[in-house]
Image 1 (tube, rainbow, N blue to C red):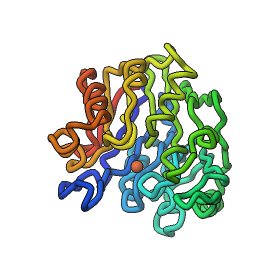
Image 2: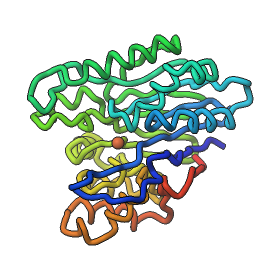
Image 3: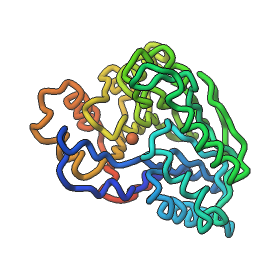
Image 4: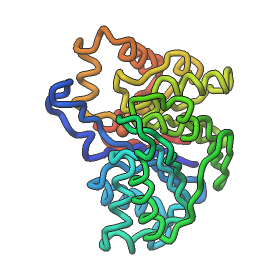
Length: 289
Ligand SMILES: [Fe+2]
C-alpha cells in the first residue's frame, strides 16, 4: 500500500508569539510519498535544518542501503520549502547518503519582485542549478495538465508557475508560483497546494470545475488566513486534511486574533469538514494512499 508522509518539520515546533509584530513563523513543508514498490517521491523538504530528518525518513522507507528519490518536487522557491534539498546537496555529510533521479520545479525568470522589476527569482534558479549539479539529477519543468506516473502513482499538474504571469501584477510574493497538483493511487487522491494563494486556487476551480474531489487536502500556505478559497475547498471536499503548521500558527488561527478574516473562517470550514486532521507540529504522520 502506498503512503503519504507529512513530516514534522523542526520549525513546526515553534510555539512563541505569532502576530503582525513578530511575524508569522509558519512551519516549512515536507511530504514524502512511498509507492507500493518503495519508490520515493519528495514534495519540498522544509528548511535547511530539516535535511537530516528528511534523510532519515527516506532511509527508513527504502530497502537499499542508499535511498534513491525518483522525483523531488519543489512547489516554489521559498526557503521553508527548498532549504532542505539545498542542504542535502551542498553538505558533504549528506550528499553521499542519497541519490536523486529527477527534480521538478520552475521559477519563472520574468517573475516580478516587490519593486515591480522582472528577475526576482533568478538567484533561486541559480541555487537550484547547483542542487541539480551536486546530485547529477535530471531537470523537469512542469507544464499545465501534465501527468507523470511513477509506480502506480499519478501526479497531475493543475496550476503551474507559468500561470503566475497572469497573476503577477504586483506584490512580488513567489507563493503565486506555487504548484497545485494531485497525487493519485489506485485507492486515494491527494490535493497538494504548497503555499498557493486565493487566485491560484480560483483559477484551478475554473479550469477543473467538478473534477477536484480528493480524499486528502494539504491546506495552502500552512493554514494561514491570508490564503484560502472556499469554492476550492468545497469542490475538493476532503475527508483528511493536512496542515503544515507550527503550534503557534495553529493556535493563533484558532484564536480570536484573526476571527474577522474571511480566510480564517474558510480554512476552518475545510478543517471542520474533514473527519481527520493532521497538524505537522503534532508529529510525523503516515497516511495510506
Ligand atoms: Fe511556506
